[in-house]
Amino acid sequence: AHLQASVFIKSFGEGRYTQLQSFLVENEVLEVYQSGFKSPHSTETALLRVFNDILRATDAGDHVVLVLLDLSAAFDTIDHNILLSRLRNVVGICGTALDWFRSYLADRTLSVSLSGFTSAAAPLSCGVPQGSILGPLLFSLYLLPLGSIIRKHGISFHCYADDSQLYVPINKNGSSITALLSCLHDIKNWMALSFLSFNDQKTEVMVFGPSGSCDPSKMDLGVLTPHVKQSVLNLGFKMDSDFKLDSHISSVVKSSFFQLRRLTKVKPFLSQQHFETVIHAFITSRLDYCNSLYFGISQSSLSRLQLVQNAAARVLVGARKRDHITPVLASLHWLHFRVHFKILLFVFKSLSGLA
Image 1 (spheres, rainbow, N blue to C red):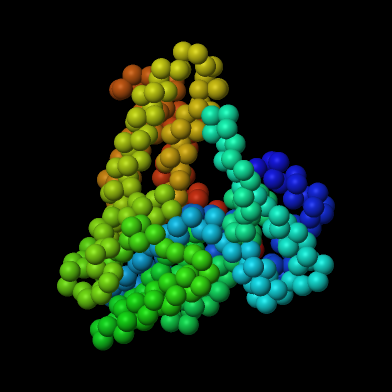
Image 2: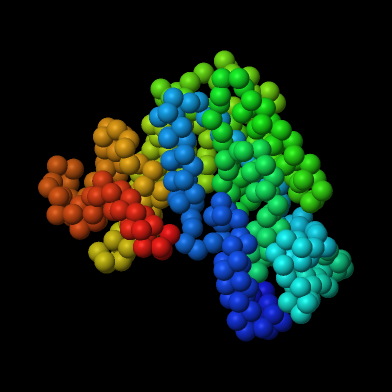
């Protein structure tokens, strides 16, 4: 990745990438609802927006259908000619700047090395390198028409890199489901023309109801029916149809205790300061991932996560199960305080133009 980045900088020119990024931001070219490879966006900000929209709809008494789509080998199938056409006609890049991109993509080759043997080089006329500084940005620009297709059908959506989420409230006459299915049909047709395709095996559907869990079998979802799930993994976070987050919390608790048992074996070799760093890396990071989504869940669910932090604090100071560890937990910051802090941080950034 570092080699590819250095080659790009030499061929593309010092600061050209920054100039391109500034041009895209100033002219509002980038997709608003694409959170991948874009500062200050993250999987958490993407999920916050989707969770909020769905909760608002269910609070209003509606059912909501969420469709999770995953592209197959998306970075590897990007057609260079189509990409250059999009840069010219959609983004507005032309002249010398377009020639820079053409030079960056041209004359790439592919070979396979295995057990000391290397195949002959073959021309590579598609794909962008994921590890390069330019690859992710080109991928986002290649997908720009996707947002227009979805908006045409009045469907809400959010993307993170090659993961796309479509969701829509269900109205009584079923027209919203028809619009959703029509939208998916148009997306597949556009994907085929762009040499992209969805991984049907990874397509997942969830239905949310105003009173928590609902029975999707009572709804006519057409071709989406076989893909309906009660729980799905969405950008590394397990969602369930009743928003209790039991599946995700169980997963976090299980993986955290597994890591904690392993860490106790290396504790004798580390100072307390270094061991605290390891605790944060392997345990706190799991508790903190998308923890703003825990806001509003039941105290019993939150207490299960607090048990993990309690156990980590005891291991850190070598305390027994019934020893008083409140000062240690205060230094690590109590779990519910960390959740509130994250919410407040997002609000502050939003009000300050930093989000």
